[in-house]
Length: 464
Image (spheres, rainbow, N blue to C red):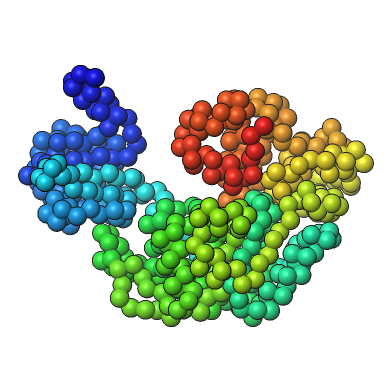
């Protein structure tokens, strides 16, 4: 390949990626500044390219520039959370990796890649504030969460899980819960908490797959002003959950480095905020959940062995709905009762063929999918008193089908459930359109192949 063609290809690649790229030479002059970085910082590329970065940094009020630090120290700075004001005065949050570029033995410059995390950071702060507010109001006499009375089921598998769960409520040991997506892991977790001696203390849940490592660490352990650029003094979830229970959902998605810090907190009973030097004692009962088989995540190295054994003091396995026999009918009747009130209907029962249809379905999304099916079906009914098989809107994930309706029940479902339902549906549709070609489906969904494969495991989606 000719040099000029090669250079043009590299230039197009740099311009096409979503992450911001900024390269300065050894004198601090900007040589590369792609459109993603310009969009992120609200800068005109012409105001940055071929200009000395020290002058640009002053304009953008950037203190302690990682680019200039790396240029000076010749040491990389990885996964650094940084907050600063862009040209419009808007505060942005980025996760940056900055490395020195050395050719031979000579430093030629510094390269920084930036990923915009402003929206996620804002959402995570709102979550922290909401959870903190909930803890302030924890003595409100209104019911805060689920308990064992809310769990419907008479089958042997669910009774076995409930028997262990009730014993766990009388203990203070850590708990590991395994169950497919939609089986009710958080419902069991809340029941354990609200039936324990910690019932009047905080119950806080955090999904470990929802945030990147840098932000998740700050949310769990808290931050100290000056700990990183733009950091403020804020307690983490361990401090907020003191004397109560912290649910770590999808622990199998927590990065290994962060798992080591979690293990230290569990062993020592102290937490240290990011950027802080003070050890803060915490008394928190931890419940962890995984939607992948513990044996698999252990053998695949997704969880540290020492952390696994520290969490797996009490082990609870929640059965999938398809293994719960007549519980499908019991749950369906409960949902009919619920949506009769919500939709002002008067559905009395399910026909025999309808029951057979429900029992024969695989229920990939488990109880969550069943509830959505009943809600969707009843929404389409008029004055009928019986829910028959031809009215049951089981989502078989057939694209462009009139039967493939999805109705979002904002008032009765947590946001996480709604997002999971929609995400699962679109993955099915993408795979169907591409004849189960994972690479092509990932491209349609705007995901990396590995990310799509992770989500397929998360929702137990098998290739046909």
